[in-house]
View 1 (cartoon, rainbow, N blue to C red):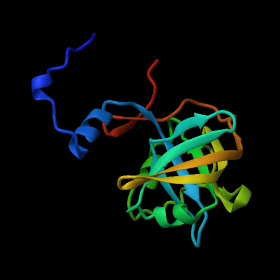
View 2: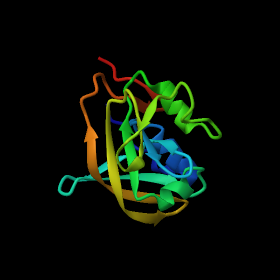
View 3: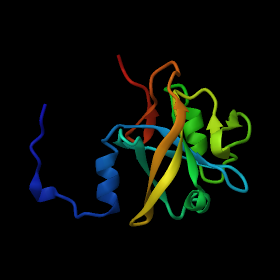
Length: 168
């Protein structure tokens, strides 16, 4: 079913329009981690595959987030694809002020000292190659160095302001 747009009710561009439009866009859920004085991490739905050769991904991070100072200096980051049963983990890494690496989060120090989360669908350690200003965010471009994609299960999705699973 297609909907004909009512151009008379179009909203002016701004944060409210962007939020409204992207609530309707289903996105995969990832957690980005980095090592610093203490490990940091955040939930991201902005993860994108940019290039296969070399293998480059991108994600956005707010410059006002608690993770930004560490990500701004990090040489490497961890990229974790969450599976449909990990909504609680996604919520923990999305919650401001949460002890993201405390129990029940299970993780290990991985290559380049990057925190690697246990039990995820897939993960990569990536070398940061650029940080591009984009309004109140930075777009981080990072080249995959190593990782693992043999997790079982299906991906966690974010849609209409909540975490969801794929339907059969």
